[in-house]
Image (tube, rainbow, N blue to C red; front, side, top):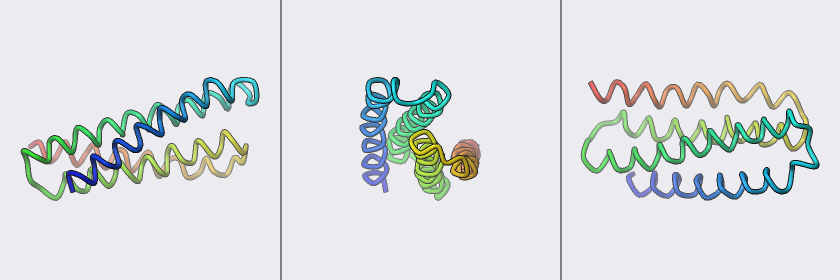
Amino acid sequence: MVRTFIFIGSLAAALGVAFGAFGAHGLRNRLSPEMVAVFETAVRYEMYHALALLALAALMTRFDGYLFHIAGWSFTVGIVLFSGSLYLLALTGVRILGAITPLGGIAFIVGWVCLVIASL
């Protein structure tokens, strides 16, 4: 599972850098400032949780427990749902996609709460 979370975290970080560059250089003149901000939020949360996955993988080499697995998968689901829905919202303008975003936020929170409990 450690390698899986290293892989997912590294891939998400690489995509975050690529999407960040795309947003900064390719979208500024094509999207409204509001939609650029939405896109930047997606990049920011993707990067936060990509780094969290890498840190989690490092922790898993020292500590055991199912809560670490739940946290890692929750972060992964959160990246897909939260950042993914915001990317699509910004690029397509389809507002209903914003309804998916809170589910990703909940997944992020579940992951962090699992780490809190695992630390006790």
